[in-house]
Length: 129
Figure 1: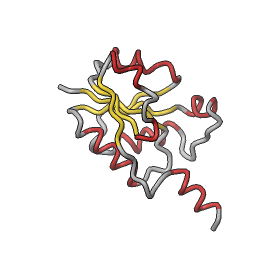
Figure 2: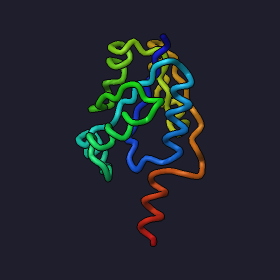
Figure 3: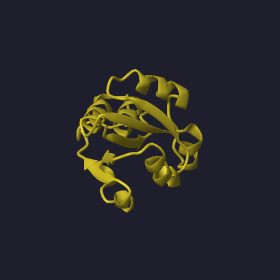
């Protein structure tokens, strides 16, 4: 079984997120989503609209997601790759090159984002209405 992992906040879930998750799952047989905790986001000066528990519930309802784990630190990726026997780390191409350091532990792949949609854009559009 080929295991794939991806990381993110996945707030205000939209079709770009769904496409990324489906394409990540298509890279293997089992998709793990490491979901940024509220505390981790706060440390990045980022605040999600939905709590970690709410975002986890949403992700768990998506057919392509097999397991949701908490992302608590930037540094946990290597440990996650080993602990969950990950074969591939998948991220959006806005992170291109940022996770190449893990290529000695697993394959690293960057997938093109859905260009016309982002959570930042949704928040911006809503604030100007």
